Image (cartoon, rainbow, N blue to C red):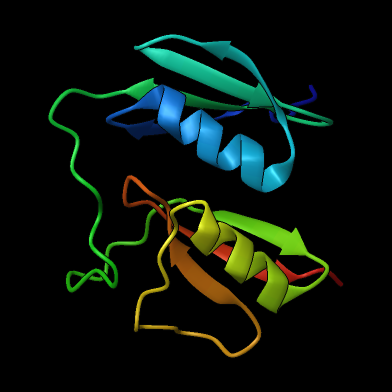
Length: 118
């Protein structure tokens, strides 16, 4: 029996805006966009974005210590990638748990990491 990753889905308040942010950041195409659901795709598993009424962003850092899924994105130039993400609406929180990667918060509040490509 073989299992493979079909896609990743992220909840949030505005699927179109999330798809626009991550699509632009990654250079991926928006292949579906409506009020309730949007999807971006390139090589590999696509990323979908589903609207959740009343959705609230997870805290960062989380004082309860609850670990959630998040995206780690590999980049060639960390400083340039952080600057680009900020131009697109991401923020850089004060709390940074590592020294070789940068945690950012996307425009709807999801934390994600930019990591130097190995």
